[in-house]
Length: 264
Image 1 (cartoon, one colour):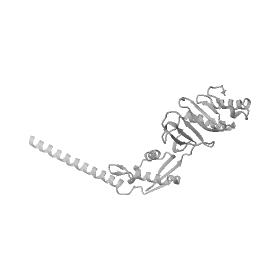
Image 2 (cartoon, one colour; image 1 turned 90 degrees about the vertical axis):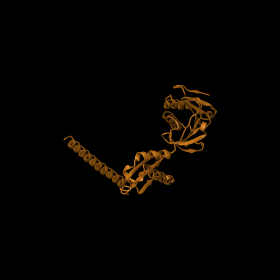
Image 3 (cartoon, helix red, strand yellow; image 1 turned 180 degrees about the horizontal axis):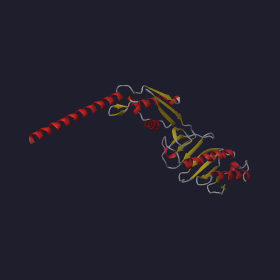
Image 4 (cartoon, one colour; image 1 turned 90 degrees about the horizontal axis):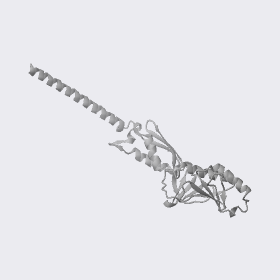
């Protein structure tokens, strides 16, 4: 009786193992088939890339996208399945490689295409970092997007930063409050007929910057003050206290203290 039970138990065990083997074999076959259909059969592969971007970057962008698509993991190439392509990851990669681009949009053009459109950053000014001996174009958000040479003039905002700092492409040249203050100063002074040739930030500055006028004298500001109110006071001061002819004799006007004007 015991021997019969043991034989029955052995048969059941073998039957279970056989069913499990069939199940695993079938599962592996199905999985392998899905992998083949997804990545090797060419059913979902990317065959065309349509890039809408400035001509100067078109070829470089095309090469970068193709390099990313031809890479992968475990032998599975991204290009082989359009549904496994992460637009967010590709966008992030391109943003790192091309800091000149302000926006990047990527979408699938089914069944076998990708659409990419991008816009370039427009220069708001030039930021020169003295300790790095480098100058960068920066956009309206303060992002450094291209190296350049020092410049002078009144059409673009020129900033000389004498502090010890490091600036790199794709990063902000300065914090938002500084950037807003500098741009606001340039805009408001232009309305008072005071042209600014360049801004400078002293080496030991924590919240102060200077604006050099076309006439050669400078105006000293602090990001902690009400810029609009101080420039309004400056306009009144220049109109009532300083006539246009002796204005070039000024050395500086200090607006760093709220509701106070000091000059020499």
